[in-house]
Image 1: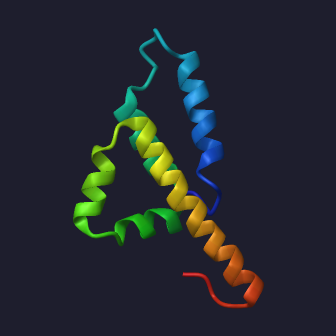
Image 2: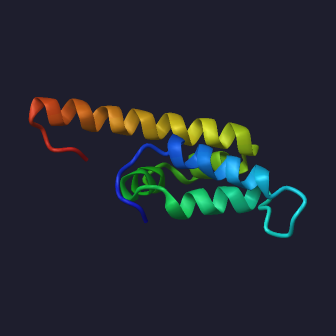
Length: 94
């Protein structure tokens, strides 16, 4: 897994790159994109999502791709906002 970074930047790059591959065998479907982004998300984001109750994780997994990206990006932004706030106050991040 990658180190901490906002998921939105590499996600946008991945989607853009995949759009350039449309019509080729190398183009990923929505599930392939989800899997690729999940593998490459920060360890802290992955751990945070794994801490969700099973029902919430299943609900996230069943979302259409665009809604999934929005939900995961919001979780990531909130998690990074919490880290930034904790770092400013001198508290240890989760």
